[in-house]
Image (cartoon, rainbow, N blue to C red; front, side, top):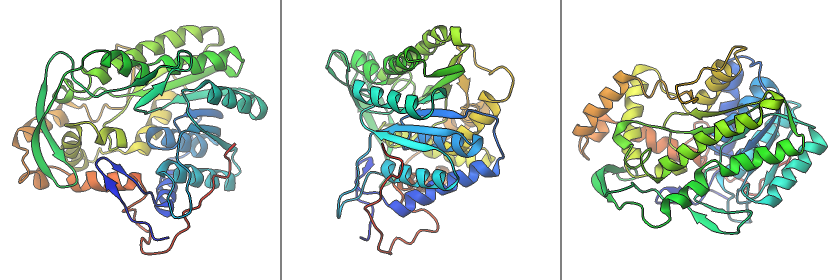
Length: 396
């Protein structure tokens, strides 16, 4: 079939297998170009099919020659209907890994569930024995609690009062004001249940209890802080409470891993175009200004650049891992540079529908958004007939 993007709001209902495959290959080639990393050898990535999780799997495999197991929840293809982008990403990654002689298998299902945890543990036990790196990179709007059965839905809301600021519709380029009502009821608790650290801790507890964590094993979860500009809706909002919980959980996990000399970290990463960030009011405008500045300064990074730097320059240097005063690894350091943030503050006040094309990088934002789904990728013929029925070779 010939596949075109079908966009609804901040999601794309179609994905292009060849475009996704080229994206994966581009990331692999970037990691290879940066040289080997003296890093992990047996890696579990929870949330492995897109964004930072996918880049973590690619960096592990093609930077450190690691065996990898990926856990994700993606939609398979059907005749005449495309799979989700993460399905095609994983198919492409595993094909490349197997061609390179690397072990790569995956499990498709709800990572929050007891069933998928047990299935993953069985696979590790049978094939790898023990894991020396666990990446936790889940992004989900809801969670069915595996013990209580309660369905928790996360929300993107400020806390305490209405938040009003500028935002942009990245499809049309129209800049407008938006007001978001504050959290109420159980909004905060539900968001923490979905996006906090409880599930990460559950994974580590079960892996450790089954003796599947190697001596000195490391686990890393991903977080974001962002600037003062967005903190009312992000870091001081419901999501921020969940991120606080995630970061506190790192210390609890680290304590539990002391007997195997294990480590647990949260890595604070840069703002990037993802399905999740596209859904957050204000963030698309912020990212479009950020991209313009960072590209002009020659310091822009995408997911793969961020994660390759995290592995090579932070986690696996052979020296002690450097963290901030709250124990977090910071690879958002370039985004949060004082000069970068000062420029954004100035441009923010100037941002209008008319001025944004000149002062921001909305075109870059749109391209990155389409790239998430395999569209607008250089070297791909989008007029060609392609097979949507792609299989994942290492799917268990």
